[in-house]
Length: 49
Image 1 (cartoon, rainbow, N blue to C red):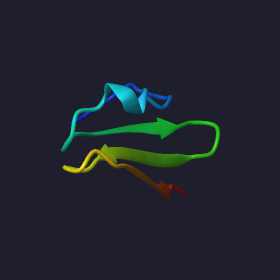
Image 2: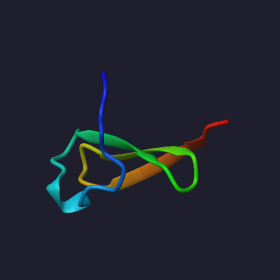
Image 3: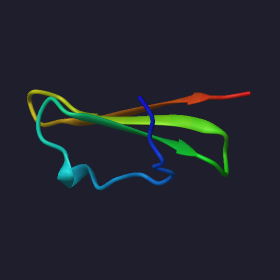
Image 4: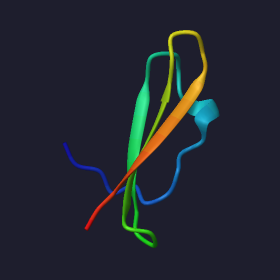
């Protein structure tokens, strides 16, 4: 799977159970945002080296 996203998408655009990811070029981090089945937005990141 590949993506060219380099900015965070709007969390409001996610439906319950969906996730999105992108690469933060400035900080060298892989970022993930998801919306749980209950509609709660959660996010995380992994530093790349």
